[in-house]
Each structure stands twice: as structure tokens, then as C-alpha cells.
Amino acid sequence: MAVVESIKSTNTDSLVVCYKRRKRRRIIIEEEPNDPIQIDIEKLPDALLFEVLYRLPCRWALQYRSVSKRWCSLISHPQFVCSYIHHRHQFRKSDTDPFTLVLHYGKQFNSNILALPFYDDSGYGGGGSDGDGLDFLNFLPDIELARKGYTFSIEASFNDLLLVGGYLSRFWHLGPAFWDYCICNPLTKQWITLRRLPFPNSNRVVLVGFICNLYSCDKEQGCTTNAHYSYKVVRILSPTESNTTQIHMQIFSSDTGEWCDSLVSSPRGLNPFHVRSSNAGVVACNGMLHWVDENDRTIKGIVVFDPFNEAQGCRYIDPPRDLCLGDFVYPGVFQGRLRIFQKPFFQNHSNFSVWELEDYNNAGKWCLKYKIYFKDMVSEHTDLVKIAKKISPPGSLLAFHPNVGEIVFLQFHNYIVLCNMRTKVLTMAGRLRDRGRILAGNTSLEAYNVYAKYVFIVGQSSWPTPVPPPLKHEWDFLLILAKVASKLEERKELRATLAANTSSEV
Image 1: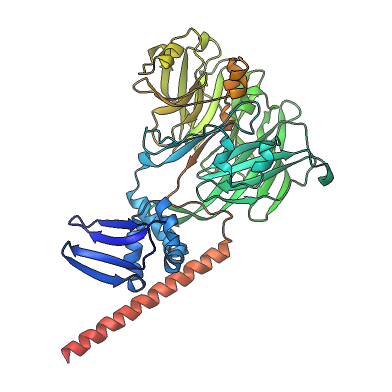
Image 2: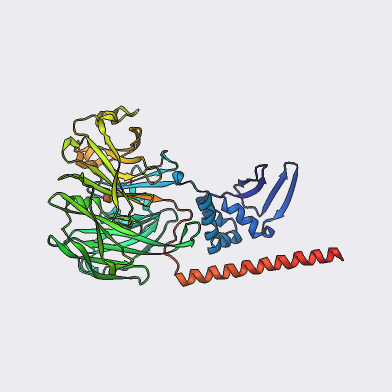
């Protein structure tokens, strides 16, 4: 295991941390190459150690908790987490935040998971799953059941958290079939299982949403901390008839640890979930959940619901006027702004458009950001160009790039593609594999279908979201203790300085 061997100060006031693969309890701080000063690591002031640790990438800081008990205590402390987030917030560049694109595809979802990590504004980091995609979530307790054929699917994501669901129907000794949900963080491999649904199973189509309420740790800087948060899991049951003004929901709250049955009102009549609304899924944006309302292949609008204020009911956002009968519409998010991807049902699917909602809090107005024709696309990969130039190109939206507004992820047959909507350039990002169908000689495009509801952006926050979240009163108490200890330490240092000055004067 790599541990810190030395810290070197350069002329640019930056710190260079050197590592060595053996246990060592000494740190060497070099002011000049030929003038080393040895300091016992246990005597290194917390303030200096904090300054070093703030500059480490998040993944490294987590690993260095194993350097020593003291380092583990410091890095795990709530005050360090808040200060680390503040430091990252000041210097972070939003267009370089790493993330992972996770796709759950195929009719048998149990093994077809593709995880594509991205480390900068357009670069693919490699390491996509090839083989048993369940390795991406191999720390979860239900994975072995999924390998044996039990229904398993990723239901939703929020920042760096995933909501995973499993349908257990073969355990006859446990009674009727039931859905089991758990929340996990793939980076830290922490997970928690939610209380089992207390409601009987329903044959109705269900959309699932997952959203967190993060707490502000510095309102002046606009900085939020995920070190403490609350969350809701919302199961939205399809209305049984058209023009329904009350919609049935089952909501789990982290504050109570319980599910509750709710009837939520809507200002307009809502319709049963069909293909377009079901495939589009539920999108979390600005603390709200959004899903598509359709009727007779026509997009009527987008339904908005705040799970943290159920009494307010739903509200409704009208779609852009240019939508036509049968158009495919997928909502998504780019840095807190609601977007929709529109692909015409007619015109041989020859183009797509991206709309963005402006003035979100006041009904909003849709602004056309891009309209792209497939025939204008270029790429160094000839296969992608051939597909784009077909009479009916199969390009469909997977996700909006979380950092760069002009880039979207598209699916061309079994190819995962980055499309720059400004330059019209296509870049290969990955490829879907369905060995069973390929070996059987079945090249049906159905084998490669990925619906938007099964595509997830797993971000990497300034600090990983803990699972489960600590209770708010526990977190507040720890912060108060940390601040009191810091003040006492400052007073102690001030008294020592005054005493030293007094003795020198005498």
C-alpha cells in the first residue's frame, strides 16, 4: 500500500507529495534539496496537514485514511469534509468534473451493464465493462441473486448515488413477490437497503424517481454539502384512466424511514403511462421530479412534482409549440437547467432538436438551442458516418453531457457516440454487446435498444455522498464541537505567542 514518504515545497508555493510502498511514520519536508528537515508525523500541526490533504484528489484522500489512525480521524471528521468541499468549490472547473455513464440495456437486464468513465470535457477514460457488467456493482448483497436470474435493475441516480431495485418472486417461503430497493455509492461501495414496500403488488406501470435535498454549508459561496442530506424515493403509479386529476404515489422518506401512500393533485388531467412516458423515465432537476404526460402518441406536457412539499401537488409545463404528433421527446438536465431532446416521428428521423427551459421558476419559456441534421455529421469513424447518412438514421438520445452543453450522448445501433452539436463531429465512446443474440445470428436492432430511463450519469462530487446519511442533529453536534475545539486551539496559540513576546521583552 502506498503511503506518504515526503512533502516538498516548490518555488510556486505548491506542495508535491511523494509516496513509497511501505509503512513509514516519518515525513520529510524539504525547503531546499540539500537542506532536509525531519518532522515526526505525529507532531505535524493539523492546520498544515489539512492544507496538504485539501489538495489531494477525492479518491486519494479517501485512500489515505489508512495511512495512520490520526489521518483516518482527521479525514473522516465533519469539519475536514466541509473545509474540503469549500476548497474544491473555490477552485473546481465545472467542465472537468469526472463522471461515469452507466447504461442498463437489453431485455434481460441482469448482466448487461456498461459503465463508461469520463475524466474531462470530452475524453473517454476507458475501463468500460466488458463481460459480466454486474462487476460494476459487485459489492451489493443482491448481485449473486441477479447472476442467478432474479430481476435486477438500476432505477434512478442522483449525483454519485444509484437507486437499485430487485424483484424477488422465487422465494415462495417469504410470501408473495416483492420489490426490494437499495441506495448505493459505487465509489465508496457503501449501500443501504430500504424498508420493504408494505403495499401489495400492482400490475400498473410504475415510474420511479429518486432525489436528495442537500444542505447549504456556505450560502455566500453557493456551496452545498452532501455530507448531510435527506432523500425521497417516489414510485409514481400510472393513472387508470385519462384526464385524472389525482395521481397515486408511494413515497419513501429518509427522515421517517417509512413508505407512505399518497394521492397527489394535479392542475390538469393526467393520462396513463404509454411508451413515450415510460421510456423517458423520471428526471430530477432543481429539487423537483419531472416526467412526460402523453395521450394518443402526443406529448401533452411535462409534469413537475416536489417530493419535499407534497401538499403543493403537481404543476404542469407545456411543451414547445413545434412538437408534432408522434414526436419522440426525452427530458434531461444540463447543470440545473431542464432540457428536452426532440426527434420527429415523420421526416424519416432526419434530424433532432434540443430545447432548454428558461425562467424555470416562472412557468418558463422553451428556447431552441440546437437543430441538427444527421446528414451533416462528420467523424473519423467511417461506420458512424455511414449510419448517419442513412435515409432513416437510428440516432437516439442517451444523455446530455453533464459538463459541456454542446455535447450529447447518442446511440447508433450498438455504438455509444459523443455528438458535438456545434461542430457536428461524432466521437466513438463505447459499444454495446449482446453475445446471446450475436452468436445466434440475430442482428435485430431490438437487441441494442437502450431507453433513456436506463441511462444514468453518476457524477463524482467534491466529496463522496455517505450512505446512509448521518442524522442531522448528530451532524450539527459534531460541527459545533469542531468549531469549539478550533476556537480553543486558536486561543491557546494566542496565549503562547503573548507569553513568548512578554518573556522576550523582559
